Image (cartoon, rainbow over all chains, first blue to last red; front, side):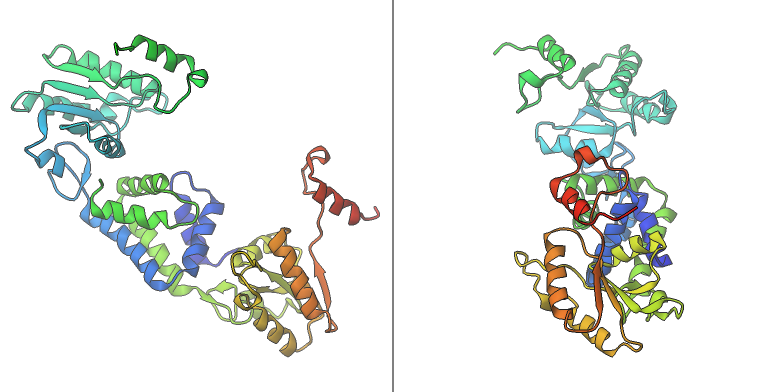
Length: 199
Length: 199
């Protein structure tokens, strides 16, 4: 129904995660009404993204430099590796300003239904990194999603790494800040009980 | 926290209607993981949109040609004008395949709170179009949203046009297809009663 330049961009926006045809339509008409300079700024930002961003060969995070700023920073504790599923996870962990070690992006979580086997993740590269690292790695924090995929990945990695003399830890599970006990699900509450700490 | 090419594009996506920072982030990481050719196709589609699409000077719809295909089509009934608020409305009306007349895009609806006065809409252009049109316009269909803004625009336009010898109609209000009487709101139901038809 729409002329092809409009329909083409609707189709392109439609490919973005979680975006349907109606929202795509709204984006296209939004851009049609914007001044040309703003649309050019948008195009320029997408171009820059693909031209300037690369993968860090040490932690596999997206970065402007290789190695990335975290991996190249001598003030970070390089004997502590925090394993995450996706690059976005690093951003939220960095926001806490709690963590001073380095990171490693697995590139996903094990999921046998969707065919994500250990070979599809960067497990080989993780093992290699741990084996080669000097000074040796002392602790590996598994900062993976507390769901089925995260749990199976934690199990798999723990089995794989426990022969080495490395402390393997995982993020605490319990009640999230600001939540109400009354509405907590049983698994969360049972984890909070198991992980209770002295005050 | 993110490097500037990533943050820039997050900020750009964030400007799209209904999109927050988290969704923008998801879009950016989606594009980072896509092959370069696909991202270039996306850029190309945005470029095309702004280079190829123009406003039709007769109906103010977005189009590749001026006048647009509908306005240039001699088979359409040019003595019947369907007034809509936005170009998107034309697309849904065309899908019905019911309407054979032409269109006119007002560019919005009256809204005194948001400062959308009659001068901000294309009311002057509409009057001019109606005055100049040969053969003369016989019917104007006001296909505006059935809400407060739509109602005030209908009232305003009806007052303005009623001195002329033109039939002014509006879309029927009533129960939408597939709905249940039990859950209809009072206004819809009262409109459905008022507009009841013999079977």
